[in-house]
Length: 281
Ligand code: PAF
Image (cartoon, rainbow, N blue to C red; front, side, top):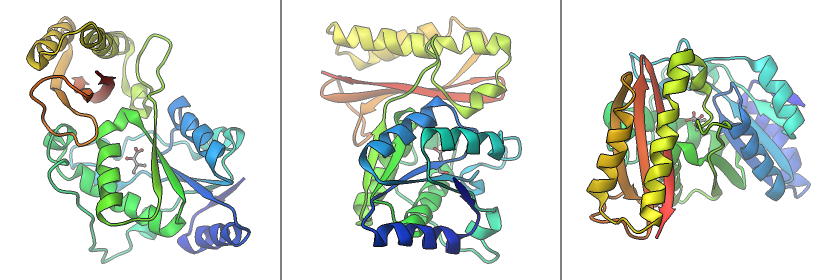
């Protein structure tokens, strides 16, 4: 498996594959791979002939006080995991390859990027859509794969693809969890032992909410209050948001009906974790 650093080289590799009539699956990542990423590769392999994984810690999606510098990086380990999972080529450019001096152009989806995670991370989704759009233009995949854990990211990217008439399919894959329920995330390595234990309250509260909805509760406020009550049992949990919205459009809903996203973000010390469930009633 090759690791490619330049746009020119990845374009040539993909073009050779496309000339042979092969379909291209893209798995965009920021590296420090876990089973969630590998499940995206598995899904990509099922429907595409050639799999490109991008590994790029994208500076434009991090706020000034966020963890860009300390974000975990280990390309050697990632390359081993990616190769075992069946990735054909890794595209891992330097920052100046993607954002050369004088870079000026950004892609911004309005409205749905200012709510949920966008509220406490202004500019985050502008960075995400910009880099993802660039990756789509460089790799020209038939399909690209994203995790449901970043539910808002997936919805924002789908909106960008639809609004800009980008010619590819976006596939969203289910959240992969640790055995005890914690959603897999590269940021879980920041948690100390006590925080790691406390963080279990996220999935517990979401699963309880899911159960209540499936058993007939339709009052959004009640479900939200129950989640908050559970989260507050962990003294160190600082709630950023708990929201219940339309799962496809992220629009506000009055009562629980149809496909609903129950999403939350909680800080433990300086580590901000997100998690969600989708319930259909
Ligand atoms: O989900 C991620 O890891 C990143 O936001 C993505 C989609 C690779 C863009 O940098």
